[in-house]
Image (cartoon, rainbow, N blue to C red; front, top):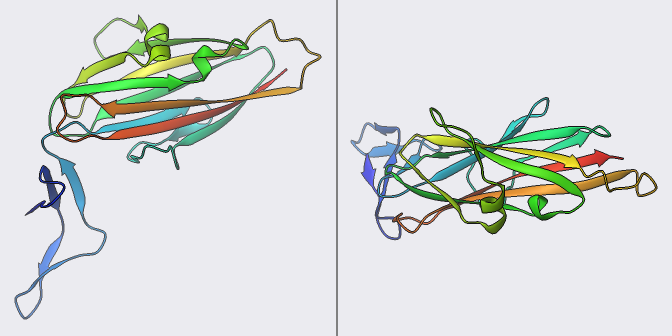
Length: 192
């Protein structure tokens, strides 16, 4: 195990190390795994029934390689499951924000927070404002179920499809020594 230095003093790097004939340690390429010891590290994923899951184990703030596309039949609702886990080494706060689908008047939407062993909680208003935060222990997670349907006020004379993207960002709270964020996306195409 090699302790991190420089800009990331709170990181330990685990790697496969072998020793050559001359007695020199060699770190095998691609074997490094980083673990945040003194902070929270959010890892989010997005899942839609029939479309799989994206983002688990991928952490970036742009949502690259963390997006699901789904076409929603006329008059039907879609349920988007967003999970967040603390992959860091310490308990801490993760702040959650979603945009822009919950603020869209052409869509009827709601968000429900689910945690193991606890009651479901409506968190639609808190997610809209970006003021939803949850304390998570290392390795623990939560799930947010977002239900979205094209509003009845949309007339059939409008375009035949309506596309919107959900951007969901989880970031470390003020109590974390390391600042990190992870973004996942769901692109929804509603048929009218």
